Each structure stands twice: as structure tokens, then as C-alpha cells.
Image (cartoon, rainbow, N blue to C red):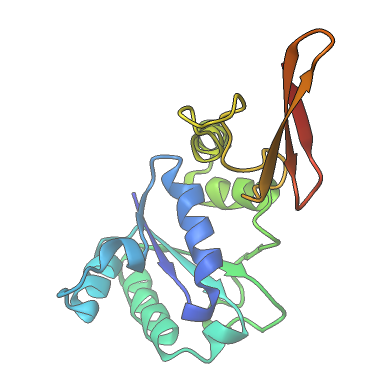
Length: 198
């Protein structure tokens, strides 16, 4: 299985998010920024991706409707799909722009803001199955990896706020002279999250 993602450059963030949703399910994804390196033939790499794909995800928006690249990728794919029945075309709609007439009868996915419902719909449309917990596990693992600094100077070992992700953390030390104990506090100056330890 190979999923080709067709999109306009102005919709790249959504395309990247969808690529990650699929890749976390161990699905092979052709996403241009992962597949085209400096020195590669852009047309050659796109052709190779289109020829080998089993699923063609077209991210449709006003941006895509005015894109020559998206139109050419879609036309090439439709010729291939008519001749062989492969790839399966799955439109993912971002706004109210009407789908091209040749794919207007295909059931599309209305994409929201990258929610769990969006991930579920896309993975299910490609695989026919429910998404696994792989994506959630990967997020939790990455979350701890990016906010933690085990070798840090304070006892919290954080480089980012665990609530909002801001790096604007302020640490302070207090000493209780009566009991001769030291307290450490850490406060996020962006969202107000705070914690303390002894």
C-alpha cells in the first residue's frame, strides 16, 4: 500500500499532519517533502509516486482548485484509475470549494482542525480499519522527550511548560529558615501553570 498526498503548497501544514497520521499506522506515504531531495527530478519523483500509489488523497481547497500541479496530478491519477481501477481516489475537503466534476460523485472527508475524528476518518478510509494507538503513544513519547531536560539545573527537569508548551519558564528558590528546608517553584509566564518541590 502506498498513499500519495496531492495538495497545494498553501495547504502544506494540513498535508503534513495527514501524512503523519498515516505514517504512524505504518502506512507508506508519498509526501513530497519526504520524497524529493535536493538534486532530484521533481517531475520524475512525482511520476514514480503516482505510478506506484494505491490510494490518492487529494487535499481539496480553493488553493488546490487554482493549482496547476494538483490538477495535473489528479488528471494523471484519474486516467490510471479508469484504466486499472487503481489508485483509489479519496478527496479531503478543507473549505466550501466545489470538487471537480470528475470526482464530484466520490464520497469525501470533511477535514476539521486535525482532530481525532479527522485522523479516524482518514485512516479508516485508507485501511478500512480503526486507527491503532500507535499515534497516541508516539505523541506521548515525543511530548516527554521535548519538554524534558534530565540534565537541567533545576529539580523539575523541564525545558517547556507541560500545559501549553511555552519555553517561558521561571524558576525560583525559597528557603524556610525555621525548618532549614529549600523549596523550588517553576511557573510558566505564558499560561500561569506552576509546580513546586522540596
